[in-house]
Length: 199
Image: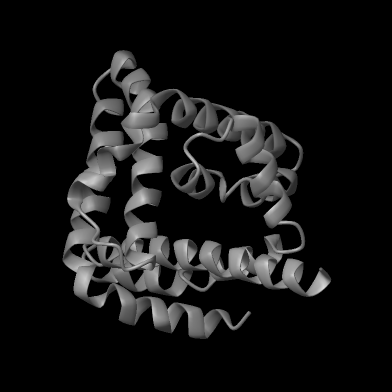
């Protein structure tokens, strides 16, 4: 895949929604970050909020990707699937941490392999957690390094954002998120084409 073209097209696609998407990401960061700074109960609250809000982010950016009328309130749509979102977050986090304990690289591989789980749940809320995790691992087979390089391409932009009094980071984050949503859409399309030709 031409990752540079994906990033450039994503920037153009995000342009009409940049303010909205930045606000969504900012509120997400505050809802996750602020409680964890208060006390031990706040840390638990952040953990409980992380899964549903992560799912809400994926719903929001999938809507932008599909040109499907994104809304600020997409961020809270994940609470409609609270149990699935919580289980997905806990399982992925636990497996990633376990992998990181084994010389970091396995943790990165696990994180990349399960990176599409929330997008899959967003599109298939009736799917079981086990099936969503398996589906993510399947569609990322042979594509983990490609996604890793996509993440790496945003590092210079984050560094530039830091130089812009940190505020610039909040401009880069929605761009990064939408690029991942578009990548998910792309690999789904590639799988559909492969299945069509194989049949």
